[in-house]
Length: 308
Ligand code: SF4
Ligand code: SF4
Image (cartoon, rainbow, N blue to C red; front, side, top):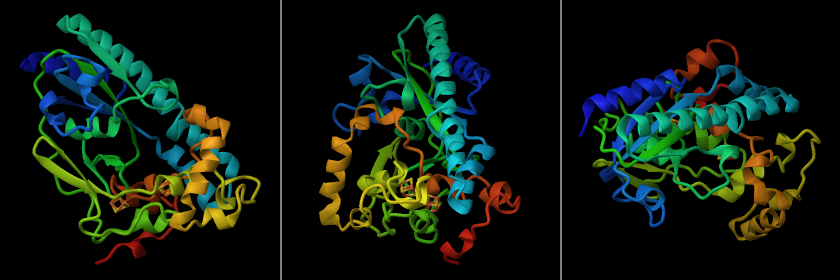
């Protein structure tokens, strides 16, 4: 394993504008689901270089203004600069540059990957790559938390056949304690994030480190993200009947059917899917109180959702 190459690659990644970068060895993916292992995408892959861009506080502010003040038009700012737009394009170009740099430096293949509107392909989970590369830990919300920015990041990853020196798994203070913190659960408008219950979590193991996160109900989440409920769309009306938007589990089939019949589904990342981001906006990890509470950007008292 080549430490000097790893350092050079990480320094180059940072020079491309990413905010954090780490490297995972291929053994960190031993428990990847079938079809989603790095070698399924790049045969012979030996290392995964994962990185993130942090989302601007001002873009998160736009999401908060929608939710707290009903300024629906501003949610486009969040979509453009805090969700699918600029962060993913930033990652798109960083991926391209990093992959080319790795190939030139090592002579090995390097495959860029990013999320959002820029791919349109089945792909690996960028969050799991970031976890394996030591960038942070999963939160109960299922979002990847970095100590610096909480869940307010976007992730990308370059797969390479080069054998690089890996970074350690994140070993700082535990970032999320869902037994005490209930913010994402309580701020979720549809109950998509269930209350913490020991044993109910989805477990992820990488590099000998295990972490659990909630089994989100994605159908309920999509109701919000696609603005089908009055609270998150500019018409102020429910786009599908409220009886369906406050669903019983038995009604979720009808919701899935709605989305499956919606032609936008074919272009999921190109349709407005940023109407709700409360689990991302209000998570306390990443200096939330300094950035949004004390600064007056948010008027929501999230303290009441944390047990002493
Ligand atoms: S809001 Fe609280 S429980 Fe949810 S992910 Fe963040 S720290 Fe964890
Ligand atoms: S985006 Fe909104 S609806 Fe979806 S899980 Fe987060 S808080 Fe819940």
